[in-house]
Length: 190
Image (cartoon, helix red, strand yellow):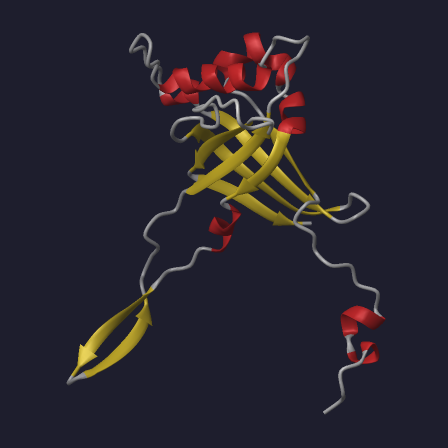
């Protein structure tokens, strides 16, 4: 057995870069019903992304089950998974365009009212409240993308949060949290 030394590390001697969780970019499309009003923000909304969670769904496997036999247990993999959708959570920075336009918040508030407008009770069909894609591109330090996950038929999943409280005792900038759901996706290693 070799003693620990950099020369015994393949990653070290071959100058392999680590994987970093902050080298990514997200791009959105918007539901068609919002494009007339917010289409100019479709590209710029990605600049406000602070973080995304829920990506481990790509590695979901069937759970194990057990059977009993005369006081013993034998294990097996279930014949399917309990669910097949992805629940994602994205945090956004909020900025005021031209001093008064809270455009990120206004966009997601309008999107949240597509599925069910809490003010009027109006509803639309699924084809009108989902968007085509939410794409996550993961790269290295120089920007080469090595993995791309494209979530399809993306919809909002629950209320947008982060504006619940106004407080004189904090100096922190406000962050908006938006939850999304997608029933299917393409996960491509490039």
